[in-house]
Length: 600
Image 1 (cartoon, rainbow, N blue to C red):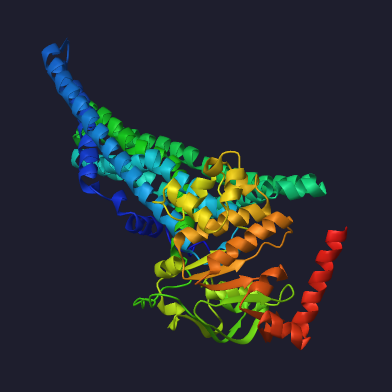
Image 2: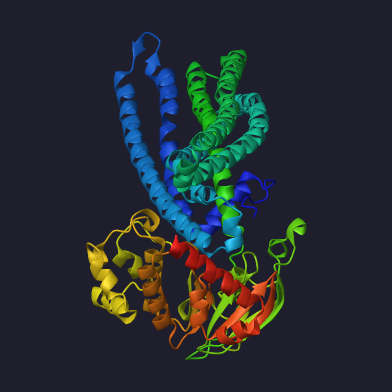
């Protein structure tokens, strides 16, 4: 998945798109700009007052103290007004920025969770996390300082340029012409900063992704003594991140000195030209001194711009990556005119379906089909077990039924309605998936049940355990519903995690249940509990089980045997055993393995 928008887009276009996505960023910007303009304009009175003091307050042989005091009073009022206006502009800009970034972060988080599983699988989790955290943080830093500086300095340059032209157009032209080459220097450096900061953000995302994998796989690394290998990988990622950051910093460090150099040249040119014009050209001493002050006022924003540009490019790089996520289509796509599912029990139909993961991703080098022309009808309320060797296509069929992905060829229907015509929200209410490794949050059992049914009370949760015949297991836990399950449910066994997942599914009261059994072995008591809970949960519901323990298949209404992406056998457990085919051989091998482990 490409998470970056076209890098040929100029910064202004990227910022413009960001403002469109988060309109709060531009809310009231007109009044904010006027306040900033008035605030900077009030400060421009000071050079004029200095000129007036020199030309009219300092007379040959005497000083007009009262006149200078009056000018000082005017200057004091201007400074107070300027401070008030700039404070209000700062507060308004900061408030709008926080509202806008909150909206942007919320949209981004919501969009990430609506992306297809292919997108998630092809992007490191840490890289996605970096979009919500570090990439947004660069925008926060920009709007808290750089955005304000851009607004204030821009308004100051506009106001000063107007005053300079009105004051003395000759000196104004000299100042503009002398400082103009700086624009080309900044543009040259800016183009390199864009690439440098883009690379820096990518390296940061790679680093976070690597660290995320290290933390998630800590137990496996410890088991194989491979900590050093992963540490070396993280160290390489950190070195790449450091190099990219240093390169961006070196390029950015060139900006400030270049602004200083041009500032010196501009002031020299203005003073030299002013001395040549002199009184004979109508330029008084006070006017020249005042214009020098104006020149510094004009150059101050340019010097600060050199620092702001570095921050702007970092923010634009982060914003580009954020917009890249928001530009990624959510998947699977929803119909503009969804059709409601019929009430009551739902049948499932798979009609001439073929599927290739590469074809779904648009990768020509990985489009080998994993399912070949599958057709399967599951009657409403029927319990079907999918069995077969690893890689036979069982999980892919379950993903297609749950519409976690769409078929390459053919279609899947639930209740006679093609899944592409069903809204995702309704499908998630009517169909529940219990994955092979149920995810549990590092909190209590009650918390892990409540996110599926937020309004459920403890009484509702206890009733759900009782309904599945699991009250005895819940009572055996130290704190019942308030028992903490640990990180990713690590305090519970694999079988116990599946018990919680089954209760969680029952609280939604789905019409279709897709269950991918855990492959890890469980003790006999837990297996009895799982079997009892599954039997009660499946009662009256259309259930599709990916059966790794063939005891589940033996209790299903129907068994579908898959091999190499094709259905090779279909019938009841007893009929298939009597046929002495591939399912019978698989079941016999399973019985031998379980009896062998029992004897051991």
